[in-house]
Length: 388
Image (cartoon, rainbow, N blue to C red; front, side, top):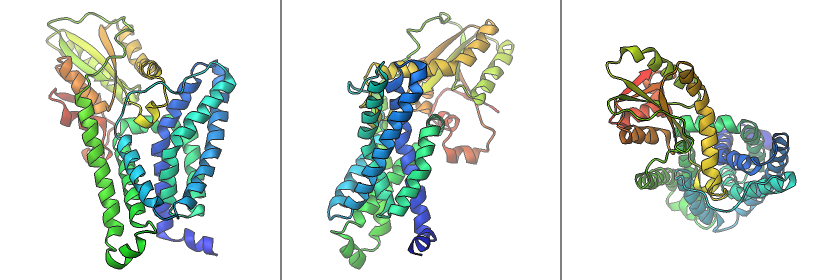
């Protein structure tokens, strides 16, 4: 009866959605690290390594999260956890380079061990975030993990692409972590009685302040980091492109392997004869940088190789179309926030126009979803042509 009453409350369902979103946002990059750990295995063994390694890590994660839920009932631990969660949320918005730590292996059992270790080390963030969102309810915790973990394991690739295409999802996830951190701080046993008696407004003000702090600080650090690094072309050493022409009109076409980017490229191909000047087509694929929590567990040389492989795969269809039509082009692969990289690359290459596809939604929907095309229009001094 008590369980039924708990499920019928609004707080239960809000907490459930918080657990699901927190686990999805903090687990998407785990899939990249797992893929990198198994990339040296023969194809028929990669699936086994990922299944057993990730499966064992998930079991351990559930156990650790249940322990964390109980530990957060102790005095002071919620305050400490709130500080950790705020930093975790900020780092979610700040991509960094990788360092030497966990490497891929060409041995099945070694790869399974590597995946288990990598996932467990990275799961500290998940454990703290999910345990905080559960607010002491084991029922809520188990149900939230039961729903979100299968989504992460079986839909990791889709989730990563969705978060890459709509970066606002990452921002929302980071803000949610900040909100949960603020709520943790206001409900720690050390301060809860005083807050309830003298400053009940902190129960909503602290979470709101936590969410705002994370977004503002995270975006500020990320912007400063982006200004200090030029866009590195990971396709430069791959070669095979045409030599740039001095008097050509440069058109940049962002390509991510989707139907949307294909429509944009087709529009450029159809209009080639309408341009007064010679047209130089530049294809640009942007790979989402690994968050620092993931990059720290991947050898530095493996990350560019992984991004290059993924970028070339997403560029393949567009390159085939241009090769079939014997149309000269250059292709590039950048890493970072898609809109920022596109805008900066267009400026650095001296492009005259950016051609992008839209998903047929209204301007309000695109703005709310934080679509890349909408952000490019705001960021880039180069004119943007949108193709429906």
